[in-house]
Length: 427
Image (cartoon, rainbow, N blue to C red; front, side, top):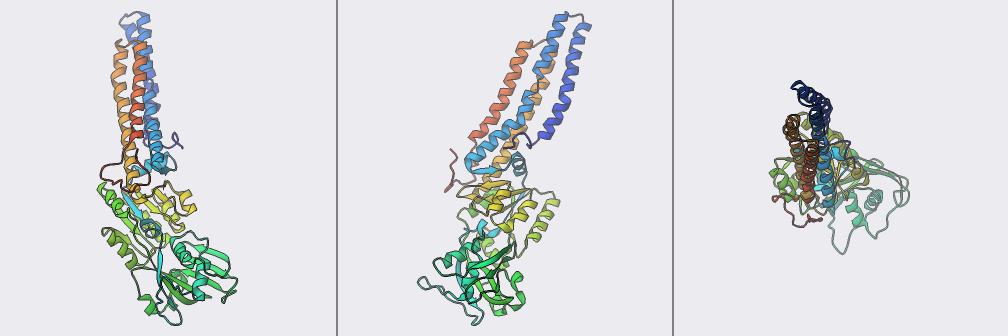
């Protein structure tokens, strides 16, 4: 962990220390000369000058920030929250808005098929438990999704489990669009298949009667050699901790939003079920990044929470990128904060609360170190502290700063953030 490299208020502490040391040397010299001026014994002048140097040793000032950061990072790791470095902890303490992706982030990440339409009949096919229709184009679509780290791909492959699928080559994932692949076997052998949203597939060829159906769920379109062949409807449920987590963020004074590439009605359904929070729908990766930039220009510190490959660009633009450990590998590796718990939305709020408490502890330590030096240096200069006592006082001040920081190791999440069902306990 980069504890000493990037820390909250470390630049301020460095600036103070840079000016503090020369100032102390000057004060020690003035103490020595002042005692000589008033005809005090040289030994007394030297002793008091040494006492000034000893008591003003900036140990407490130097420990104020890294001690709190180290304790905060350690406590976060105990809770299952992994900050990439101390700079990420700093950013987390200054977040004013948290933006969530929908699919796989606010939802369970286990979407299920509710139906699909064939290009020939344009008829919704009922998905019975015992009998699951398996047209060739659907088999080809599921085959193209193999190896893709996206919740909708997982839902398709769950439906396809145990069923024959053609082989594919040249598989390409387009963030915000979908998947393309060359079919190497089956009835569509040699043809190019595209599976994804309608605007990327071929919006002009999708029948209007299909576009108007089931607008409040996710839709996956399929095209083969540029011709639309079918649409798959999928649904998902909000995570069990989503409502509590979003409410906790709002209680902290943090604004909450959803940004999704899904259809507006589908995003609105989830937003309404979670308390009617603000949402933006049908956004591509670049549009998400632009929206984040706009919020940042207004002065807000913005965090982006996602789990898929298509969230990576937006997370990179945010002040703090937050990923779930169950998300895509690339997204997790590039995140500033990874939540490895069973209740990531609730713990998103808790991790930001911890970061704010760490920053508060840093400021307390800096204030204590400053007050100690303001009080102790004049006492040493006036001969009220011997070098031995000055050294003891300096050591005690450092111990006080460390003790204040160590309290973070016993940090408890605020009472307004529910702990029910948490994957990692506080104790």
